Image 1 (tube, helix red, strand yellow):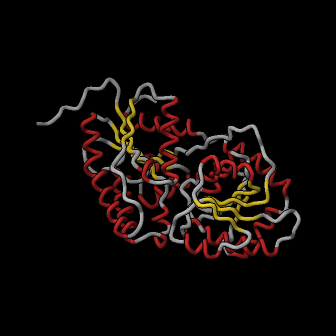
Image 2: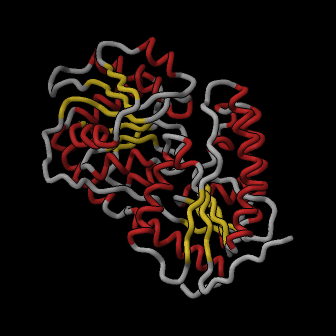
Image 3: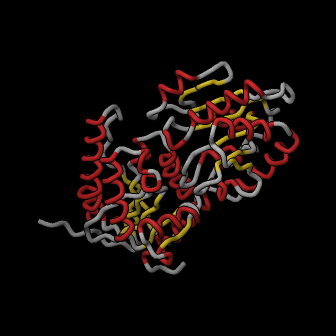
Length: 365
């Protein structure tokens, strides 16, 4: 006997938050921060429910990867649409690329990045094929598609052929530095992330080795501090870690914020970013940033960022030496970074996300 969905005075948006508890990654932070910001200032014309899917398997080998793929397919194809139908949801929102391809409930999707499309060589063939097929069909089915940057919107249009009039840009946010204490910047360069080829952390280590060995001793030479773990190049990173480098592994948010406050420079050499949360987190703490001039990174970092074009060891070493030579200019760039980060808040992310839901539901803005 079928169950009649409950009657609702206001439309219900069901948000898939399963990745918030499965992975210590940027998407987990996006989901958590958006949910908390929306709870602090909830929409008055929409009800929102955040739902968890089944827990994934620990990422250990190809077998667990296949298992997680099966879990994802069951969740997106069967369980999530069924939950939406039983709760009488008017809209399903998926915050990470892939959503239900069937069912009577309309959808919106936020595409975080298309790195697996732009850099297919960096991803396993099976994942790449699944992600591309499901991602394209999800974008085609969604009433509206969210991108986190203008660069991301351009990728979605070019690769997935989504008309620009169906794409809405919703920038991600950051949490400002709540501490009034501003410590003196210490002589180290900070990088954050997994040891994946796309992130080019190992390339940064090679370039820093050259800088550390050849840079003048004044101003003080900066060590390299890397926070993060995991990824296919983690073992290589540990093998080549030299006297001028510290690998911290995963650290707490409080520890990371303290590093942002003390670092002389934050560096992101990533070959592709959909947004780059660590970049704006560093900027929110007044840390100047050096970013690769590709994808969304220069757009997110703003006019006050240092850019790098040559990711060879020689190019990295030369750019580090050049940027780190003028500590007064670094201080000025740090204040510009703080001002740029103040323009990006999670409350604004939550507000604009709800605006997109209203538009998808045909509600007044």
